[in-house]
Length: 389
Image (cartoon, rainbow, N blue to C red; front, side, top):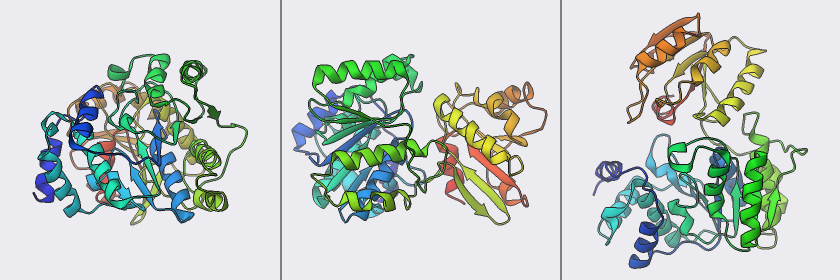
């Protein structure tokens, strides 16, 4: 199987399937094992940035790292990394071929197959530490078969409510499903009602909790007004694991200053223009994005918005309206994508500036001069733009 054929096969599978039983049976039937030296990260936002900060902390200290994150921006190979290098396309294709031939593979989702692929890669590579980001939720996520050294819950907000529940408490219960008896858990800056739910579950399972100190704000190379929270979790993780990984203490500060994670207030130069890529796609993330925009607009002209979203996320448009100079809408080529006409209609009710719709996300940027663009609302839109710029 070639790489494109492997991608075609994987993308034909359901993105997610609810339930952990399939993954447990598949691993048991086929002898798949997961790394014991691992960190498991759940949360509404901040999972990827926290994983990147942790990975860099371990690698800077001289430890070999494995990293499993989602979604990808350009290539699915990004999801599985060794020492921050993507697995190559040939290996990706070969592992897809191998997985496809195993009993039970035909019942797995796209994400479950990628999780199984990560297990195979990490078994072959034997990293000193592996960092797993959940795909959605926690309790029933495919990654939740692992037995980690440490768990982290980065944030709790309303997202994927059709799967996880429509209250903060319900979503907190799902995220807290990654808590394992006796295994310490680091908590980000969570809503009070989420803290209460998680504290109850932690007490039942004998899980020591370590919330970040919001009075201490570590500096980091990652941009965005919220990144100090993710940096705080990385620092706490290093402290929790210092006996097993003593070299971490000497390099954590340097690692926080040298980490890169794309599309989180990711400012790029394109000819004479500035392009800001930000994968914000839910209510909690939107509040941080608005704060960053307010700060940006104090010293710069308002950016031009290039936007797409799922059908239930049009509330972004009136929220962003005061902070942008124009709005251009494009359709994401995925089920549930909001039609451009719908987004434009919403904009006409709250925005007096120029409004446009396009299928071409490149030309508006390439034909402008000395302009700033904010590209946000959908990971799939970011994928299209990041692949070019």
